[in-house]
Image: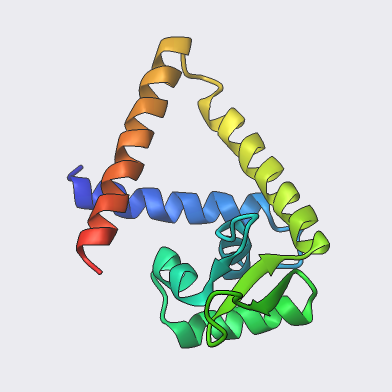
Length: 141
């Protein structure tokens, strides 16, 4: 398989695993991704939009649903009163922990057949892939 085909299949597989392992949660895949992308210290809407690669209107709709369900809250930025900062609520943090446990469980299952050495290699390659994808996103804004 070529790289493009492998990346496409990896995306499909990751989404499928993400959905399956979080189906017990009252969230869509998009909502799980938003909650998983909010740092503990919060993040402004523009930065979150860029991190996720979605436009502000799409993100606003997702944020509004998550606010209504008490998973996140929106506050005015102390640095720029025109900007809003998104934070996890207690319920949001609790559900984030469930999401992370579900992801951790899936990762352990996926890598259970790897030797110790192969796990180290896979982790290094995934770190390198993540780093290069992050650089790609910065260059191709």
